[in-house]
Image (tube, rainbow, N blue to C red; front, side, top):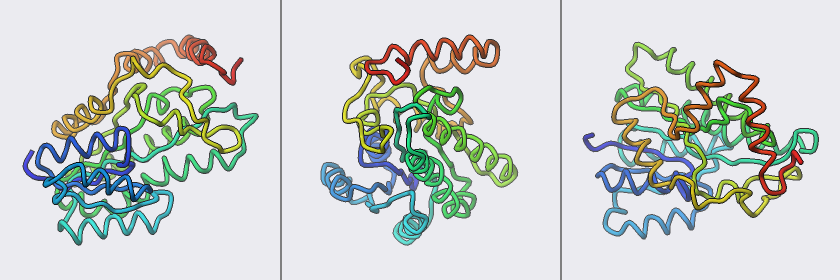
Length: 268
């Protein structure tokens, strides 16, 4: 790709941070958005001379004004937008009967509304450049995951939103892509919210055999370059999505069994 202007939300860690390094390495101009201002500054410092092509904009995507400011600062600095990667997100782990509804609202505010707000203000600039609108989702957006009602709901909502935008702008050159990684070794499970809204502080899964954020970032950037509609990154995810169409009841039972085996599973 020729030099592009790329906005990445949730850029302070995990897949978002890996996307920053990936796009900067390829010579693009990158705008990093996240709540943690210090971490954004650390990443920019780590980039050395390449940090000159990076703009850090502290952003809470659950706040519409922050998202509007993110887009305005990007256009002011770089003159337009080619790619928006909606990556910011949080997870949860609790049964619906036990969880406080404010926790689900918090997930929707960040995972879904954050995507809506950023996309709303970036849309005219993306259309102007035949740009790419990306949502970093999950298999949870295809298959409901027990103990993750808020997370699955937010990802299902993201899918519906992005797929509708694709159809609405079918003749305007807008590229819309949904990327669904499998389990990736990030801090998302450690920061997942429990029934009372507090972070659980540890991962219930073995992180050693998971895909790296760097690998996911590389796959996402290649998908954007090829203007793919959907990327289901892991084989397990592809099989789940396929079998869900054919044997939905079986996949429900299998999903239950898998998540019931997690340490301290709320299903037990």
